[in-house]
Image (cartoon, rainbow, N blue to C red; front, side, top):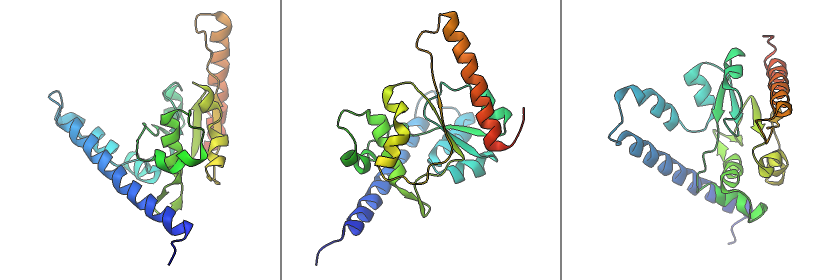
Length: 197
């Protein structure tokens, strides 16, 4: 009796989710066992341990979650619009196995793991659901992340916004360009939330 491709993929996803949970538990334990760990950090470590499920995060913080590829975006803007910015995909090694066959071998491991996580069926949904994605263009791979999502079979992509980061921050032109990008991000956040601030 041969195993179907769907069964094989289901088994792989189950195994990766188990390893993913183990990886998260080990990281949480490592944080709590540090000599500089204090009880006041418990809330934040437990929030981290909740995983990358936007519904869980949203429930914990009481507002919609927007995925950030990088913390180069001005976080204050998200809070003004009642959104929770969430830096996604810190580079789990186990999730890379799901996306590796579809992606170039030289691709950034962090983004490969991000795309692998999007393959996982979390809480019965295909992929991870966020209100929107914001991707500062820190590298050429991030510029192509939306295309790579499609290559990896992610069909439902929420509103997606790229922030173009100036490469030379000392120049007046770069500072003007950054200010323009901040205003464009503000417009995008206003559009997805329906709020004007």
